[in-house]
Length: 502
Image (cartoon, rainbow, N blue to C red; front, side):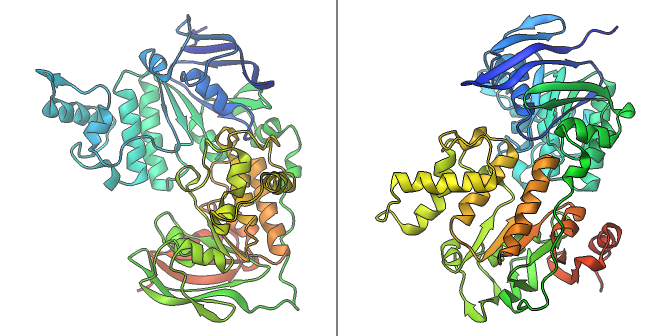
């Protein structure tokens, strides 16, 4: 039998008294795409960090090509041919594509960087992947999809034998995913071994040869994708029947409940991102927002919550015209926003769970009205209990939590402000199927308790499942607002993708 290019045996990692990985075995063969699956908190991130040198094993062995390795840093792993490309791209947007590809390995001539050689190298790597990208162009001017491909080009430019792709498709549309998968298949044919981490089951079954499932830090099993039914994969991940995943029934607005909007927007425009938008957000309702990437979904959310200044239009709160000039004024009126980018506009990774939850409330009170430490702890623990944030450790750095629990911490921070309008931009992006349903159910419960919620998601089935009405955005304009009960996944897809009427 062919020898694995990478093999973990009895891999164990402890954080204090807790085992994030507990005796896990993992094999990766040359020229295969291998999916790592499990709920948030299952141990996937810990395993990846151990493979890439970001964490050292407490016990167990890591072998590369049969040789026992001890990685003290990511640099050690890279020297052994192990490279990673993460969901949050860690390149430098303000410098060129060529500079990013050669970062840390710049060619030199007479002690100085050889810019001509750098561009030629970058051009060769990109061309080898079939990518038509100008090496001299500034990285930040390209789409996220192109930046993702540049990150892969950077990884393989150093003769990578093992490539870890962590949620590489979370911000890509269908065409961009197809281009990424073309590159992955090309690398596979060259013998590169690829670990593919994704919460999109369709993509796992399209691109992956095998799947390893983790649960609670332990190995559940290793399976051939073609022989493993999806329902069995979900059950293996969760340890319970897929039937238990059904979201709570979405309540229809009661006939006697007021349909007067708490927040309404008329003819709202911001740059070229959103134009002449009309929106009504009703108390006790979830307003789903559906649109392709770049359609104006996020621009609409930021316009309604004071993040971006309006170029035109008005926003009314309970029938009164208001100027939401900044997030602070929006918060004072009960309007709060959760960004799609948890890393840069959400969680403060180094701060504790308690500090993250109480952060916005303390900022609203001001520096001279400090919340007493005992009251902070009491408040934070009440939200940890209410939202079932795990582990329930207030002093733990929030950045060490799973993606689903980080999202709950963000929701707790916003809910501590006692909002009336909650705007959620991709609140379930990058979290597993179990945590996703928990967040969906929580959103429904918040609406049942009278909040007005806007729920933006690239997953149209999720928008239908959660929303009472669905607002359809295309090319910066709102095309229609339709009761979700009048839509199916197919009909919504057709509406979102239809050519704009002239």
